[in-house]
Length: 335
Image 1 (cartoon, rainbow, N blue to C red):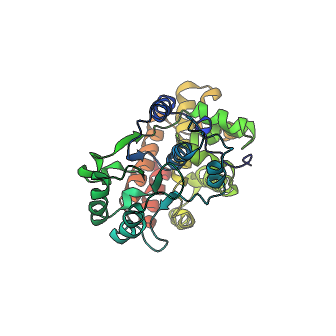
Image 2 (cartoon, rainbow, N blue to C red; image 1 turned 30 degrees about the horizontal axis):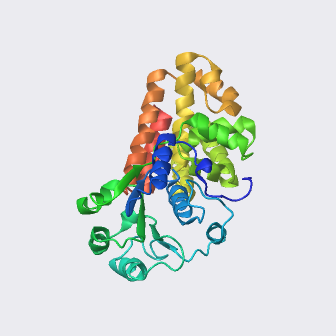
Image 3 (cartoon, rainbow, N blue to C red; image 1 turned 90 degrees about the horizontal axis):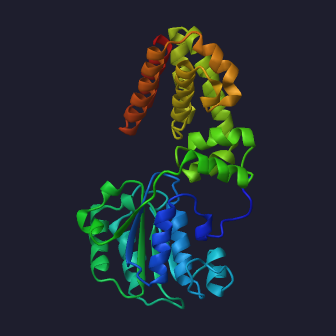
């Protein structure tokens, strides 16, 4: 399990070191922008970074990282800071509406900060803002009050209007190297050492994903189920393959299972090409991997990897889940 709670200091942030230095330099020189877009994949640390910058800017010591001792830092840690606000889609909505922006940000921004240096707004899933919401926000971005700072957190920067992009300082969070994630997992006792490399690879550059997986029994159960299916699929008849596709329905809302399938065939391909177990990720499965490689050829494994990626793209485009799984599993069986 993860040790303690997040302290929101720059020292806690893994990866993107050069970008962190630039931000701290800007804080030191008091050259902070009034609007930032922080974008990166799910779990890349967007919220952590926005919170850390916000906590630092409001810290009464005015250093380049929070002191964790002043009243501002303590109120932030207790989640009741009077001058930091969060906006996100309402529970029953998939987007941030123009009314959300008007009521929660624009009207609130008109009132000066309560006590601290700035009045800060962190818009989570900002790339879900409607066009109307973005246009409403635009005037505030064009004429921000001196005390106002806005963070727009997004997975997909392409969802923003050009006028929004042109008025924000853009920060791109790059994927974190697997070695760094693995070290973080080990140092924080998030998982057993033999599982750290596997989790780091599954995380695909996302520290958030790695932490979630390391603390999730669902992750291990799902992986075990998927590997069991892959080991048996060759011997299944058509009816059994269709049943298997139906069983995958339980993972419809968590399509991480496709990453499990991809990495399984990735390990098979690596072992066939290198004939060395040290290059595979799932070392706890080395006996199964070696055994399965005896019945596989390099070109057929490549075809299977392509089938998995095609399925992933189709689901991303909202294709029918059941049909997509049936087609993918048939390719995995027949290749």
